[in-house]
Structure formats: C-alpha cells, structure tokens
Image 1 (cartoon, rainbow, N blue to C red):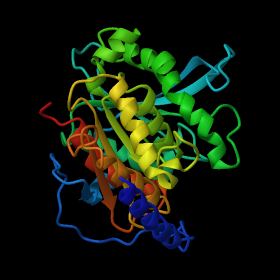
Image 2: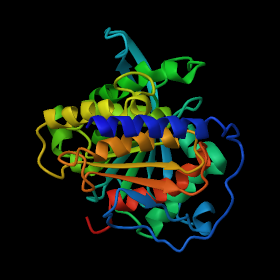
Image 3: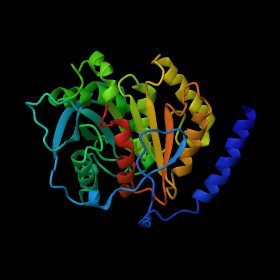
Amino acid sequence: MNQFRIMIKVLLLCLCMVACNDKDNSLIPSEQEYESEVSSDYTELLNKTAPVPVEYKQESTFKGRVVQIDYDTKNYVDGTEEMRRNTAYVYLPYGYDDTSNQRYNVFYFVHGHGETAASFFQNENELMYKLLDHMMENDDMAPTIVVSTSYVYGTPVDYYPDADPYCKALPQEQVNDLIPIVENRYHTYAQNTNIAGIEASRNYRAIGGFSMGAVATWYALEYTLDCFKYFMPISSDGWSLGRFSGMTYPVETAEHLANAVRSFNLSENDFYIWACSGTNDVAYNRIWAQVQAMAQLPDVFSVSHLTFHEQEEARHEFRSLAEYLYNALPFIFPTNK
C-alpha cells in the first residue's frame, strides 16, 4: 500500500505539471471519426466514448417538453430551518401521458459553476434537449424523465470552490424536497414518495453532474446511496476530505468512499459509478487519479461497480456533455430493463 501511495503521488505530480500547461478551455474540440459503438457492457476500467450521431444534434420531429418546477426547501448548508425556494426543470419525453400506465426512470442532473438549472436545456442551442428527443425517439434508452437541478442558493459564488458546501447539501435537499415532488407528480417507479418509497425505487434513479455538479454527485454517493443506484460524475474528483482531495489524496478519498458505501450494507453489485472526462479537460487528471485509486479496492469498486470513460480531445466545456450522456444513459437505463 505504501508503494502504491508513492506511485500515485509521483503520477499526480507529473499529471498536474501537464495540466497546468493547458490554459485554453475555449477551443472547440476537433471532429474525429470513431468506429466504436455505445457499449452495453464493460469489462475494463478505462473505456472510450462513441461520438454522437450528427442528426442527434438537430431538432427532432418528436419533441418532448420541459416543465419548470418551483419548490420549497430549507437551508441545509447551515443546518437551520430557514425556508427558501429553488427551481428545477423536468424533461418529459414525447408522448408522455398523465393518464398512461407507463412508468419512467428518472435521471437527476446537476450543472457546473456559473450555470443554473435552466442551462442544461438551453445551452448550445438546446443541444441536450435535441439529444434526449432523438434518444427517446430511437429507443436508445428506456423511457426516462430528466430533471435539471441546482445547488445555487441565491447569488452564485464568484470562486467556484466556495460552492462546495452547497454541493454537499444538495443530495439531502433532493431526497427530502425535490424527489417527492417530481416522482409524485409524474409516472415513475416510486410507489410512494416517503423515504421508504424512495429507497425502494432506487434501481430506477440516477444522478450525475458536470464539474461542481460532479462534486455534488460524489457527495450523493457518500450520503444518499440508498436513494440512487447510478452515479455519473463528469470531470471532477470528490471533495469529501477537502477541496480537490480526490486528486490530492486519491488513496485516502477512495478509502473514505469505500467505507461510506460499506456503511449502507447494500447487496453486491447494487450500485454503479459511470465516471468520465475528456482527454483535454483540465479536470481529467483530478477524476482519473481518484478513480484509479478506487479501483485498487475491488471488494467495493470492482469493474462491476465502477468504470471510467474518456472522450478524445474533449475540453472542460458544456458541449462535451452530449457525448457522455449519449454513451451513459443507454447503459444506465437500457431498453430491455
């Protein structure tokens, strides 16, 4: 174990030196052709993503709809009972019918720094909206409702690491206040939306997030594993042991998360982490270092529970999300489920 710790720290030093030279996040990744297809099963820790079909970036004939939900919640950051309002946006696939018996999986997504819950469906000329429409139309995934959520309390913080307490509090807010509203209002697999009902339906629920949203996703794994089965952290390490601790202390972070998972006493293979980042993403080294350390604990984080997926030349920018979702969602919610 000591040799592994030393090896990880040396590797991190080298990787950080490379990452520091990558200052330009604004460039559009170059287009490349890939022969790979979206996989329905993974046998290796490291995997490559397949590109999004060009037509999936165009408007679909069969458009879903997005509904705004304003809901009451509390200030979970300070631990007070102070009430506040938050907003989420819910994507309902084309053909969703309140009178139908069709049940839907639910994917909760958390935005990155400087964005809001509305950003997910608006950015890049509604790219994610179009992607979801085509994926639903072509049965790439089982019927799924997508909820864009926010950790922002009032005015967003200027320095993104200062949002850490809000990211940490978000999973509790979701379980206590948002999930009951969404999954009571729409046709999901939750038979009821008290805590017992939410836990009983966790197999049909996933959470993911980009950048600071990934920090929130790692916290969801730590604190609400009994309410979500699938986790999709995109381009950030976990900060359970402090800011950037997944990169700085990957072994300790991995052990901390393993102990958190063990504390839930879940049955074997009862959760999955679909982690990802781009090869030109400034946060690639942060999340990859942590994932590699986690993989050294196969009793908890075997390839049956944890895989990492890299997008060639993708940078730390919103447009990269489409390829991650295109690859991850059919695996998380397959049509034959």
